[in-house]
Image (spheres, rainbow, N blue to C red):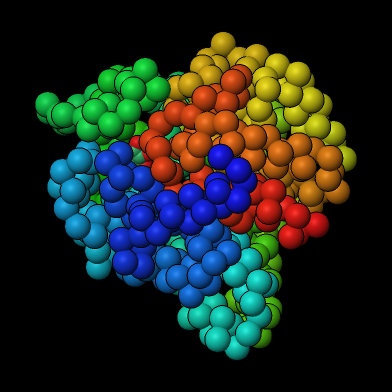
Length: 429
Ligand code: DGY
């Protein structure tokens, strides 16, 4: 298929996954509105229907909880093809049935991109309407995912990281007692090859964490205190730090000085806190189990988001560049979700090795921001080649580009349109 045909296919995927203002990630496997999927999808819509791009984000915030949290899944209608559905989560925090935790907060960054693409009065008004909601969400993150003011954000469930099956969660998950879950039937393995999905032991623990949080009524302070899983994640932390920089830009643009001052404090706190995730032996940022104080020992694709977060000092950047080159010598396509030199690396199992297009997009932006245009462009070209080889898959083998997981995947289509497609790159050049 030519790149222009791929542009057309990508637009068709977004249109066909559109449920009337919000977009599902893919039919069957993920039939609801997912938080960060939707936000990346907005970038794709912005290339041909900017109004629809705003609508995607506005509809996500319709599900915001009273305490400020924006859930990872909004169950707008029942769909038996997905498990665990609303009855398993048992939440009551917002106006739309939802899961009980959040997902990486990319929204402020994409809202800024939408404003920069069209700084007209109308879009500024839409950004102004979202600003208090974004502020409330970011305050929620600081209060309940960094309750001890460490400057790093924890996730209370692997799914809150958006990088569900990462080896970084293995040790913390192993410590989760399996209880209160009863018999259950997974649906994910009926949609995709089970060898690419998490194991049953992982699912038992995912559901045990949900049961523990349901037991405390999803009270966010109690969840932060007692959840059996509480791990500081470099992915969420870096995405949040970048999102705060973009939120600051929006607040300043909109003349919201007291919000701007508040956000500046958040940025200082996170810049300082990120040092806790630095693993001196590995020379990279890693996850940190806040229950045990132990750091993990592997480099994930989120380690490469340090530059995206604005941590572009020489030490961090040169360490990332060295890791990038080492890994690039091992695989055909950058950037594997886990280090190919690590014992847990599996090139086709969910988040244990495969490449995700939207992570590559953020990594490439980070390299570009740090002035490393060669590695940034390498990541873009690899992403384009992956989609040309494997189609609009959920994720890809870094070894041979095989597409895996769900097909006709919305965020892959969106990232193609917004960044990876040669027609887009030529326009930007
Ligand atoms: C799933 O069901 O696997 C999802 O990734 C949870 O977000």
